[in-house]
Length: 269
Image (cartoon, rainbow, N blue to C red; front, side, top):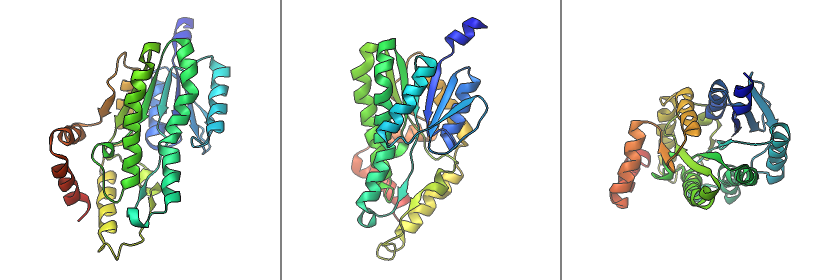
């Protein structure tokens, strides 16, 4: 029993109070990890320790990570999951709103990653898993800024993986497709300009939300993420589900113009 306790991995999940993050935190706990979740919302889930933190605030993230290090002495796994979406036309989306999205979706990943890199390097290893999206490789119209934030995560992941590999730290990104979570209801919807765009904004968002509500349950996505987080060796990028693996593969082999035409026929009619 003492050996099990000593060997239990310490895992941190950002945005772990709901959706994929919560299910991933619960899955890691079931697998024997000591799990901490960082989010702005209070959370009380057995087997998971909640620490209040705003990933867009570097000081807040550093304080949370330092508290975990004080309690545990190390962090073995970081799951960067926190994020939200904005829908609407680029023309009518305020730049301040786009910056706020990037502050959470991308710079939130940067803040949490930078906070754990030093301790992981000194310990001699660790795993950082970033939640990306199939939209990173197949950008979605009227969800442009979300797509951009996830493409940035993919590039960040691949570049960082090579930087820290000599220290035994592995970095990867998991790209879900449509998942049935509260993310759909939480999306910030910008309807401005829909009359000018011939109703295409509303129609596109309706298609996206229908696909999401019929998508994979978060528990299934969490099982996949857990398996990757605990693997001995990882690839830089993973897509969840055969359909989305196929979409990612197509985006790499078909001419970009054709890929964009196909996406436009689905989401920009």
